[in-house]
Length: 275
Ligand code: A2P
Image (cartoon, rainbow, N blue to C red; front, side):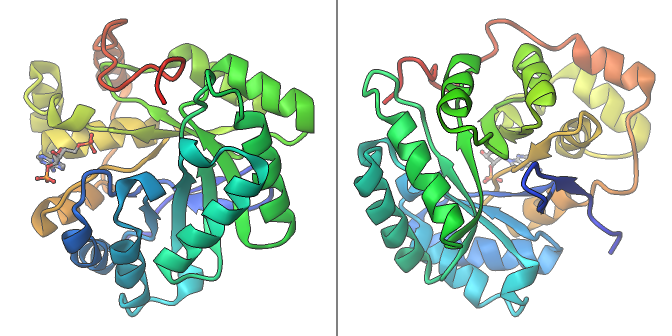
């Protein structure tokens, strides 16, 4: 198996660039999916307390036969637990459901700005990192405004911002800001929830490289310097999505992919109004 690429984080750690997403993986199937992914070579597994599948994900991690220190497990703090003490308690509950002492990356799932508590939540994550319960800390679905606020108030820059990102919604402005701030961009729904697989440009580039549309899109994420976490519940597609380390997109491919960006390409909710 070719070595998988890693991304350096601003706290001196690193994380795998390609992982398994588990949003909409049912609680009952999560353990098997995670085991299949780890057997296929994945080392990054992403879940969230809101997904309701942490027990299955933890079971898959613990039963994978791969040493815990070789795996990188991410989970996320739900918006309902944004208070400082509520966040500390929510982390304990997530760790317990996962059956893990330590989580590699803990993210604030949504900023929920109308609630006005994400700064309190961020302070709790800073404390969890200082206590060693969480190795790296970051955020998800944060806009430039939310990022500037937490950094300005605490002096601690999130290691990662996980946002909706796929060829139809490329988030160029936010990625540029992340570059300036030293934040790794992680793409959720990297395949556009499957909706991009029939795109003619993607299909043409895939045929040129003898790869599938899903592999072509995931290669685009890697070649853009993004972390990507495609979700699949099918062991064949899980393996397919990890077989992307033997080719690169060239300048012409990248230019064609750039042309797929669409200001109306967002699929999920807007971070300013969700939660
Ligand atoms: P399934 O779980 O049945 O494989 P995203 O990660 O962008 O949210 O996309 C996830 C969706 O894309 C799921 O519906 C998943 O379905 C589907 N999917 C994931 N990988 C592939 C693939 N290699 N080929 C086709 N569909 C895929």
